[in-house]
Image (tube, rainbow, N blue to C red):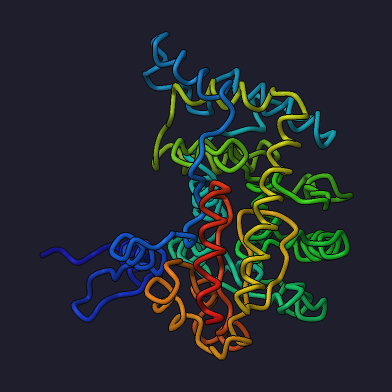
Length: 398
């Protein structure tokens, strides 16, 4: 049998392997399977159980019936690129060239993957905060880079400035910033973002910023790094319609930034998915043009759900870090006598009929200390589901 190529070997090295050498299930798949097997409420994976705005859904249906079912242009449909341009100027006063500075992708994950594969090679370092969205580590390794992390320290989940400055060096090729941040729900303060820009300028690094939760903040303003002085010329901004419009299965994302960087990413993207989601692109364009009140209502409704779950977790005896944004709340199981969140997550479906994910799934194993008792729960579910989850979690007090 022909030996595996370097990318496949890197991918295998970036994931958990079982005793037979095959990829083992991720923690997320494991917990979802446990939820299915036990009938537990699955608050482990971050996808909504309600559809998004009717205008968005109807636009997709209309596009399918109108025959928008073949390959769209490689950079994305002109109308979606125009809508992204309008969105960035409307919300952030960022003016973009829709012909050269925007690329539509198969969700935010492809935008991140294509960016890292385009920009990073052996010997290059990529700096992220830790905990980190689980795809980051695998993608950095696929690109041949070295992953350097800066801890976000519980319970506030803010980085130490000295640690951040120590992590960025002349070997740093990319600083990957996720704000609003998954899994902690923290919106990084302006001072942290300013330090990132300063360091990127000093060491001539590219800033790659993952902003998929940009509209799902709770009383805390989101500041795109590209709006900061000195940042735009070296920043690639990634977002998507999946989280904002509760259409995570459509996988319509985008990347914006300087034309030369976008061109480099396009050179990789065309050999990944080539193009994607033809009938969903006009639907996301329609969503981006919805009135401000639609975006505000989505955040307010999600914030109310956050409060329901946070209250239920407190009543159950968890310590709770209230998030600024996203779909997720972090709960500390230590007050319940658990210093191993993974062990608790395996018990929870049986004891309380609820599934969460240990935060150690988002950190390198050697950095797990300080996160071992933390669990991430998703609150992007129907209110009735969250009420039932809160009721079930109360069993932990019994």
